[in-house]
Image (cartoon, rainbow, N blue to C red):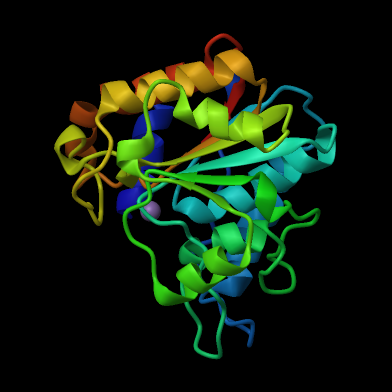
Length: 262
Ligand SMILES: [Mn+2]
């Protein structure tokens, strides 16, 4: 509920003619043996986002919800671009979790799904090559995620390594010509935003995040983006954080003016 309150609060500040609302099924959904909790519902949301994105040549910004929305966004950017896309993952977590026999939340595994190791039906089609994936602002890495990082050519920038356009430099080093940017709001330091469900200390300050995003989109065309995990305590608590969220959105969309999908 907090995530939907957050998405609707952001939507309230966006131009309605450029915003598309994607409904989320009310049922919890079933794992169906995939290892992904609520797989059936997530699959429906994924298909609805893909439909909302289809046929529009303008880059879109997805407003979560949780990080799971990004699979459809990245697939769309890969399918419609020239194939030289990098994905920047600004998040306290790399979201590279492995699927096992017990169902787990999709959001902790979505980056791995984007890289082609997801459950059937929620795995990147097309998949992104790991050497085009740049995780930044990461503070918490689980063992299964570390195993993945050790085995693949993924780029990782810790919070102290960011600044002075370091993010754009890393993207340039991938050889990419366009970029998809995921922002989980938990990449920010908890002091920057109230509406973070599971705040992680030692994150980025807002001006540092905004500067890195501006440097990035000045150098690479934005193929798409997502802002996820805005979870205010209540609808009444959301407005205090909206200027922060909107500053991130405006940094992403300058100089272009992409369409928003909430
Ligand atoms: Mn996160």
